[in-house]
Image 1 (tube, helix red, strand yellow):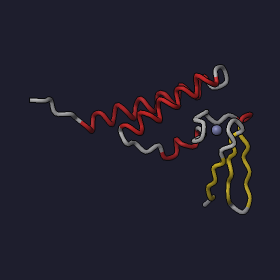
Image 2 (image 1 turned 120 degrees about the vertical axis):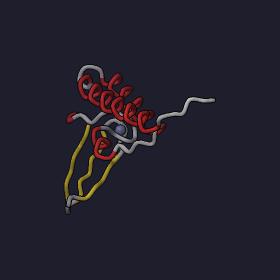
Image 3 (image 1 turned 180 degrees about the vertical axis):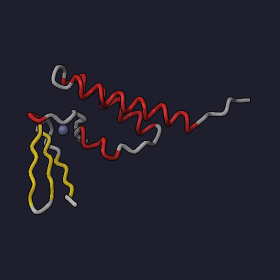
Amino acid sequence: MAVKRDKALEKRIARERIDYLLNLADEVKFRDYELARRYVELAVRIAKKYRIRLKKKKLRFCRGCLHPYRHDKMRVRVSKGVVRITCLNCGHVRRFKLK
Ligand SMILES: [Zn+2]
């Protein structure tokens, strides 16, 4: 008989890994930008596999190219209550409203 998978446990471990990888990406992003992107990529892949929503964590990296946001690689503009974050690596624009 197959061992029953503990999905709750798997998800918890996956969440821990995602947090760890994103923190790591933040740490190295000024030293090795490509490595930081790789960490984000892994975190996103784990999130997809275990169907974990990244919610606010998404704001830490570009969804187009997965590079972590860095003040010299992004442009932030606010007009009429809408924030636009433009990634200067790939040009991906993200918009969201201020409450
Ligand atoms: Zn980008």
